Length: 149
Image 1 (tube, rainbow, N blue to C red):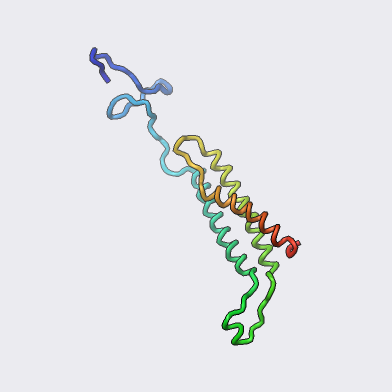
Image 2: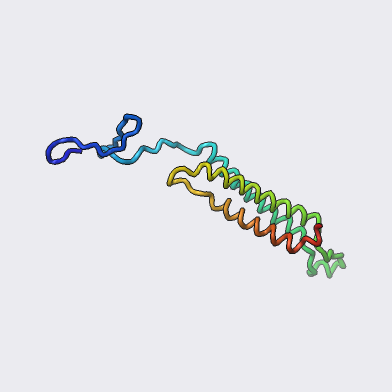
């Protein structure tokens, strides 16, 4: 850049004795040299996908643990209906909630190590599932502790 006296002004930041220039002249911004996803970013994505898979498995197993209800087919065919909760599926559901909490905690720890630039963001699904599964464990133990222990 030249002012009205014709002298060049350097407004860029100096980093290891190099000036960084943009096509428009010296700049105060550094060039983004980070390309694509690194190992930590991929690990965060894997933790997020694993937490989604575990939550889906929890919903399936908790649905299997529920007591059966009377419907048309059970009355028509005189089918026997289990009236209580299935404790095996309840215990699997509890362990899945604990696994979701552990996976999300690990993902949040890795995400916090990665969080160095302004453009880095925390994975919202990891935080959401961590809080939800922790509350779910407390509610689960409050509701089903007599059946499981």
